[in-house]
Length: 467
Ligand code: GLU
Image (cartoon, rainbow, N blue to C red):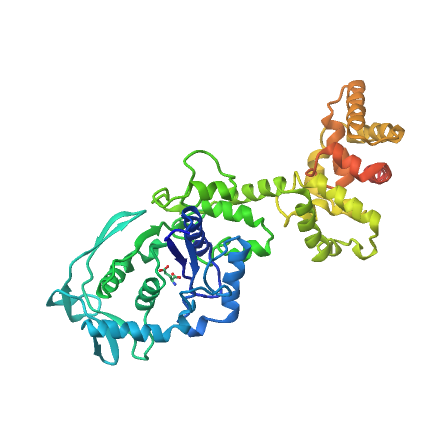
């Protein structure tokens, strides 16, 4: 390990926002890229909101996205405790250090940090009164993403509130200092705090760490940044909706970072190899739900079949998604389980998400499948579907093998004979067999459903057409 130490310092609010997840991810990537250490620190000074549950949301989200931390909750480390709520003694000690160099004073029960510089009074438009201001030396931040940022604090600021609680700026700096953090990579919303933080580091007699402020994530459309009310903004939502975690992680990597070519789907090892701080874009990144869905579908398609099978089983059978669609899963034996696997290996290539899977595959498992009226109208208005389906039924009945190449040759022969396009056979047949016009490959569909199901479904459909 080299001496890079970065941290993700969430305040457990009960949500794991994708902005936070992306901040965590960029820290994790930087640690893995440099061979440094990734610390997870819990900024739980707001007692009301800090519950076990709020912490669990973050830890589970981190694990789900594959961001393992080297030090922190459940892991320990030489710089603990990693919960601010357990560091009160350290904060007292560091307050004493500031007292010793005469940089604090008390006023109205609160503890203030004293800036250095010439003092003067000025009218404060906001407070509508005269206030004391300070001409402090500007803090120059050589931000790895934003470039040079200069800002001077103008007023002494609070370190401990009247109730004795330390404020964010103080604990954040004391922790970064005592945990040996070398690079602070965090959201741009904290850029305006950085001059205060630099003042504090210097008052403690140490050089501030390197700062890198990551641009905001904008809403998918319209102005403003993503908030927790926007759909798609929480990691737990993707967990619940059974997205592929690698796909979500891959997508988050691209929110503000790119490999500088057109690649989007990338192995995490490759991203780790290429990731670096100056490579982060300083423009705001816009959330793109379509791109995320596209990546999710690509990861689903390319994942090992056994894993897809397991994901599918967990949801369709374990979580009763098929039961809810009228399939008597309880009655399944070995044969049905094998059939399930055949269906899944056929559908893996085409289904776009695990969430879509129940509706995508239900008709394989029940004769009582739903019928998409709109798709039906569209398909049935072309040519003479009844004639085509009757020919199709006749030809399929004569086949003893439902091998895909034979099925394909059969449809080609029918089309050649009638002069109708193969589509005039394929589309109404798919509709009859599945109740929809989307699904897996047509010949695969016939092969997997098998002769018996195919013929009886065609019969039923044909008698419906005649009715
Ligand atoms: N607890 C702060 C937050 O969640 C951490 C800020 C920082 O990374 O310095 O925004």
